[in-house]
Each structure stands twice: as C-alpha cells, then as structure tokens.
Length: 351
Image 1 (cartoon, rainbow, N blue to C red):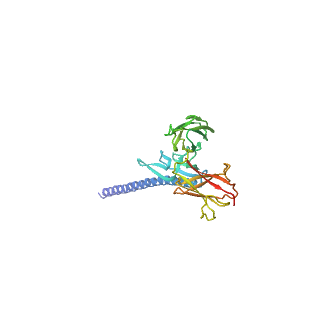
Image 2: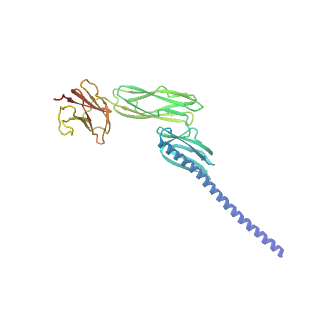
Image 3: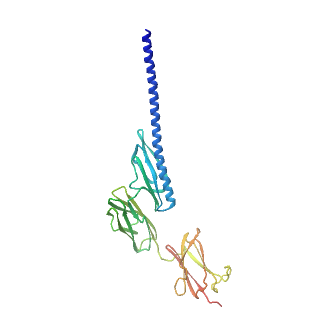
C-alpha cells in the first residue's frame, strides 16, 4: 500500500515538473519571438535612417556628392513594401500575420535607383546628389537637362535638345508623354515619343516650341514623363515665358533726374561734366530690371546694358557717371520681361 502511494506521488511530482517546464518553455519561446520581432524592426529602422542621413549629407554638399551605405533588408521583408518614393524610404517587414512599415521622411526629393535592393539580405547602396533630387541606388537612364526653360515672343518658334543616355547593359524601350495643357497658345512637339535606347548609348531628341500672334504673354508650365519597359523613369519639367516688346501702358515708368552738385541736392536738366545721372523707377515687379544707356550715336555706353534689382515695393535707383561722355542727347531704357520704358537726358559741354 505504501509502495503504491509512493508511485502515485512520484507520478504527480513528475506531472507537476512537466507542467512547470512547459510553462517555462512557452514563456521563453514567446520572449524569443518578441525579441526577434524587435530585432527585425531595429534592422529596418537602422537601414532607413542611415539612407536618409546619407541623402541629407550629399544633398547639402551639392550635385555629384556620393556616399556608399551598408544596409540590411531584414528577414521577412515584403519586397513590394521596400521602396523609395518622393521623400519616403520604407521597409515593410512581415510580423505575425501582418506587415509593419518602418519608414522615415526627408526634406528633399528622393528617386529609387534600378538596383535598389528589395529582398532580404545585406547590401552596399550608393547615394548620389543629382540636380534637384537624391538618387538612392544606381540609375541607368539619364536625361539631360532635367528641366527646360525658354523665353520666347509671340509668333515665334525655337527648340531645345534633350539627351537620353543608357548606362546599363540592356536596352530601354522609352515612351514619352507630354503633360501640357497650353495647346493653341504655346505648342510643344517632339520628333518622336517612342524609341529604343540601346545599352551604353545616347540619343538626342528635339523639343520644339511654337507661339502665335494671339498668344497671351505669361508663364506656361508643364512636363514630359519618360517611362521605360523597366522600373526606370524620368521627368523633364518645362517652363515657357512668353514676353513682349511693347511699351508699358502707365503701370511701370522711370524718372530721370540730373543734379548740379555731388550731393544730388540741386536739380538741373542740363549739367556740367562730370556730374551724376540718377535713374529711378517705381511700380515695377520686384526683381531684376535691365538698364541700358545709349549715347547720341545710338551705341550703349561702357558697362551697359546692366542689371539692377527692383525692391519689394517695385522701386529702384541707379546712378551713372558721365565723366568722359560726349555731349548730346542720351536715351535710357529700362526692361523687365514684357515691360519696357524709355526716357531721355542731355549731356552738355563745360561752360
């Protein structure tokens, strides 16, 4: 009887030990799983932060600056959730039954390169400052220039060359899609919108601009989207400033003042050399204004045309020293975009 009781107690003790062991094992497995999750998230966090930091550094240094960054795409990363888009660097990691996105945002535009890694593993990633953006990875399609600015008068035409270069080892099928909402006022056209760009080759395309007699003056903007048969793409921004040559209608004007004394306190319409000529203006658009002074023969005087700046109120003041100038009537012209104004003054011989 005692022997049977001892056996029962032993079985009960072993069962208790087994239960305790199972509880400890389950708890340790849960702790290990949580630790693994935290480790995967920390790997993703370190990678996006390191890439963002490198992007900020090269962007501040200027076009051409480069860094090589060692990154880890953690185990369980979902390739479709590993990307660089606009200002975001994101790594999505499968945790339990869902995906946890680990990301960071930068202050500059980012572009994902063709070889940017999206599957689990360790990689060296090149980070390069480009014109207006930072490239994460290597990009095999290069478009130069990435932005085009044109100044043109109505009833006119001009063109620009866009160069497409393939630095990769495989050809690109390039498709161009103009995003331009100003047809009929300012027309743009390409000599082709679809072409094959061979490996390690370049192709020049002609972008033509046309304006008409009725084209209103002003700034017209748009872009050309370039897509390929790969993940490579590009965007060319376009700005067309249509300017005129007509005289202003009273909105902007200039005033010529001449003085007898060096302190510009005694006004005179004629003055003895070498007194100063002060050219002032008001009601101009704040920014650059081009001043030209032509002598009696119709030639610009030395140092002109020159560019000055209208202040935030639209005013400016500019002084010309006529020392050594010939006598006669001089013409002053102020130009700014579609606005120009003309005035005159006399230089007389010493009495």
